[in-house]
Length: 479
Image (cartoon, rainbow, N blue to C red; front, side, top):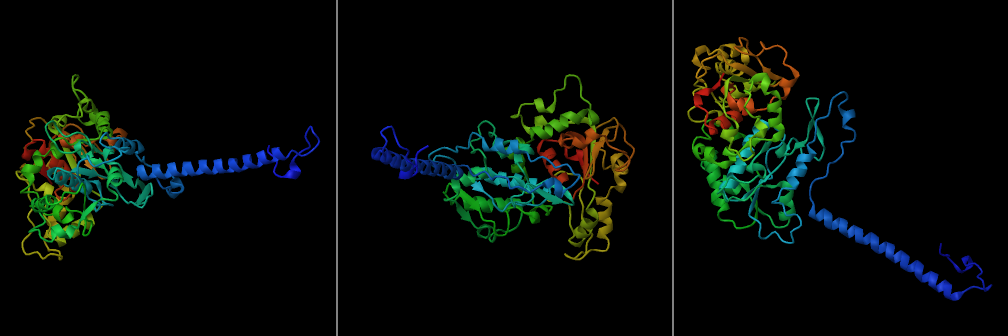
C-alpha cells in the first residue's frame, strides 16, 4: 500500500528518507484518483446513452402485491411478449438515422380502463385507419391503467395493469408482415415510436378533424382523418388526444355507424389476416375435445401456419352451438340502455344479420321509456336461453345443422360445454370442469350457430369476425 505522508515512509536500506520515492508515490496516488474518476464518468455516460436508446418502460414495484390481495394468485404479466414486441425486425434500435424508415401514425388518446371487447373494436379501427393512410400503425398495450404499477384492483381482484397486445392477438396489427403484394409499412410498438419520434412528432389536434365531420359514423371519421393525413408529410404524426380517440363509444353505440364502411373494412387485411395469439389458440386446442371433438386426421389450430387467412384458420366446427350470455352487471346496464333508447351496437347491426331491435316509439333521450326496459330485459337476460337454443320462434334455427348440436355456454363467470342436445338454459349446465375455464375464442368464431347479446361488445367482436370470415349471416343470432 502506498504511504500517505512523509512520516509514513519507512527507513530504507540506506537509513534515510528517499525524496525521489516520495514524489513517485505522490504522482501515483494522484493519477490513481483521476483514473477511478474517469472510469466512473465513462460508465455514467454509457448509462445515459443506453437509457436514451432503450425507452422500454421499466416495471414499477407495487411493493408486495401478494399482501395487497392476500390469498389470491397473482396473474401473469406476460413479460416474454413485451420482449418479443421489442425485438421485431422493423425496430432498428441502433440505427444511426431513422430517416429512411416509413411514416408512422400514433394515437396516444386510445381508450384505457375498459373491457377488452370495447378496446379491441377501437384497436381494429385504429389499425384500419393507419393502413388506409399507408402509415405504420403504432400498436400499444391493452391498458387498464398507466400509472406504472404492475397490478390493478378490479372488484377486489388483481389484474395486470397492462397486457402486451401480442399476448392476445397476432397478425399485421402487432407487427407481422402484411399479405403478399400489400406494400403497407409494418406496425411498430409504442416504445419504438417514442425512440424514433420523441423530438420530431407532428400533433394533429382531434378537433381539427372532428369539428368538420358530418357524423360520427366510421366512414365519415375515416375519410376526415385520411383527408387530413394526406396533407401532412411528416414522418411522425400523432392524433391529438383532445376529446379522446378518433373512434369512441358514441360511434360503437350507433347501430348504423358501420354500414357504409363495412364492405371495405371486411376486405381489409386488418381483418382477413387477424388471428388470436398462440397463447389463446393453445387454450382452444387444449380444450377442444370438451366441446367439439376432432377427427383423427384433423390438425390442431396451433399447427396452422401463422400466415393463413383468418377464414381458413377459423373454419366451421360442424354441429357446435355457442351461446354467449352476459351476466354480472346488466341489471344496471339495462336501465342505462332504456334511458337512451339504445338499439344494438354497431358491430351487431351489420348488413344481413337477421335479428334487429327497435326501441319502442315515443322515447326521450335521457328518460326511460315505460315499455322499453321490459323489452330490453327480455333481450338481455338468459331466461329465454333454452327457447333460443332449441330454435324457439325460429330464431336459433338457420345454422343448417340437421342433427342436434353440441353446445358451449360462455358467460362472465364460467365457460364450458353443455353437451349434445342440451335442453337447459344458462343455469342448466351445472358445474363446468376446470379445463372449460381455459377455452379459447375459436369456439365462438367457428360455431355452426352462435347466439349472442346485441348490446355486448364481446358478442360484437365475434359477429365481426364471423361476418368477415364468410359465415352465413343467419348462423349468427341474438337473444
